[in-house]
Length: 250
Ligand SMILES: NC(=O)c1ccc[n+]([C@@H]2O[C@H](COP(=O)([O-])OP(=O)(O)OC[C@H]3O[C@@H](n4cnc5c(N)ncnc54)[C@H](OP(=O)(O)O)[C@@H]3O)[C@@H](O)[C@H]2O)c1
Image (tube, rainbow, N blue to C red; front, side):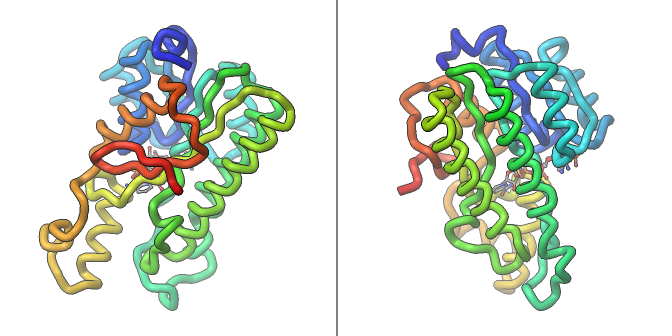
């Protein structure tokens, strides 16, 4: 789908109130799409609405609720879905997790990606539609201070690949892509994780960041997510996302 084709279509972004999701909502409205943004905090969504005006429809809801996924896909028939909503894991080593804290990202991130992916295939979305699911670089490297986070994000990459295969088998023409961003201190989730890893290494955040690649901002992440949707040249199933842009996962 080119920018011209995206213009005047609808995109749904989950977790649109902050961080990467807000960045994606901004970039997609700039590309001409109408964005339906889902998050639980109505006040934070209202701020995005005030910024983006009529191009943005806020929906205060739990994105992991299967009824929310079904209703919004039926109502809006989106041409692009950005499955970005995610819980902040408890930043502690494994033996300081409980099963409930360990499995939080499975209950929120994976359950939400599963429900929306399923609904996208069942609808089905129109041929040429794109579904992007936010995995994480942690899916490749692990994240020993984040409980079940890395495994949950790896599961999202797998389920996105399975959905791509079903789309191919059924001739649906729906593109499913997983995006694996690098850790960044520029969002609420990333800030907590960076602080925890810096403390674990016994250094301050600035020192910790010196040894890492340039910082990925929500604005840059949003632009790259929009580019992934509008540039048909991006035909791989999974991409790493850093400040320098997208790179296929090999
Ligand atoms: N930041 C990083 O370093 C990093 C790296 C790799 C991958 N990621 C992934 O990128 C995605 C976005 O992360 P972020 O860093 O932008 O996080 P963030 O700043 O904490 O924003 C998370 C967003 O998700 C929403 N959300 C959380 N639970 C929700 C639920 N049950 N229903 C609806 N919305 C929900 C939040 O709004 P409410 O709380 O109001 O619902 C918020 O809009 C996540 O999937 C994350 O795992 C982040």
